[in-house]
Image 1 (cartoon, one colour):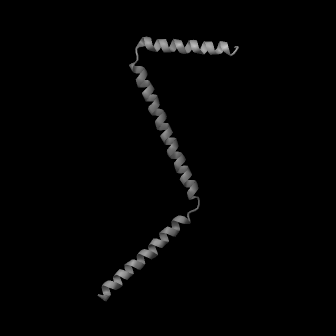
Image 2 (image 1 turned 60 degrees about the horizontal axis):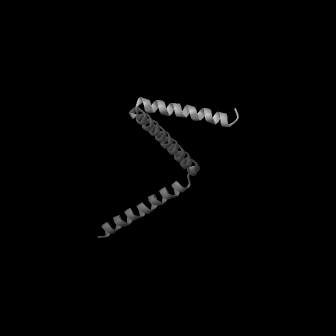
Image 3 (image 1 turned 180 degrees about the horizontal axis):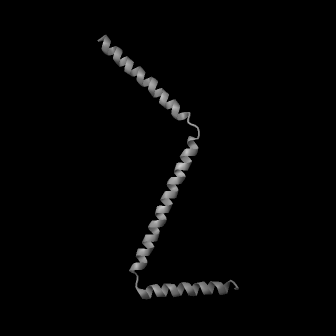
Length: 91
């Protein structure tokens, strides 16, 4: 019984000693906030790039489904609006 109690106490002390060391080492890291911000910025940039690519593919798929006359109509309307905007600005 004494040997078992001694081993349990030894293991328990070992956990406290090694556990305490790992906690203090994680707090003493210099620049951890800067590293975290850099990682977050990279992740956001990657997500924005993926979202932009997804939007581009969705737009391409949408226009691929449209008829030729619809595409022409939209193109003419955009051209007409551009011309009207230029004339209203006094160009």
